Image (cartoon, rainbow, N blue to C red):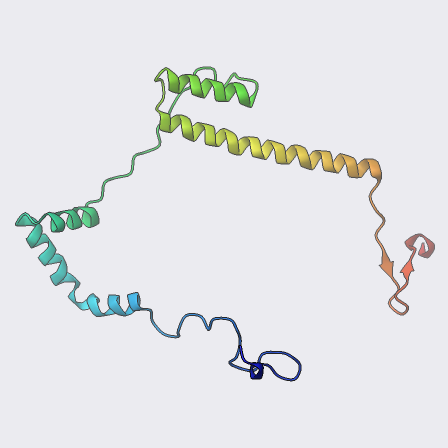
Length: 162
């Protein structure tokens, strides 16, 4: 950075900031490429299908991945014995681990249940902290709001005005 990049007040002169100028104005490379390919898409797709029919593995993979993707698996519904009746989060987690260990549910389903329990536990802790903070503030007494006189800037006791 040269000394002449700043004005007399020490601010950067126009066009001399140390920050990157950012993305250039106009379409990106990907946008320009998409625009160039757009009119040829029907022929490209037809050629990919033709090559796939002839047995080209790359074309077969491309066509199948893009035009006939594998459906995502629906969420697995599971029943974990003892989960609903467990009084604590720890016992609920133990019920999930037991169900995974005995093969009642898959490891993936057990992991999702444990992550859900973790999220729930975080909410419970945050709620507990909020309640404790409110109780502490109530015991201490809420601070009085301070109002300043517009002319002098000095604090005003609102009780004196009543």
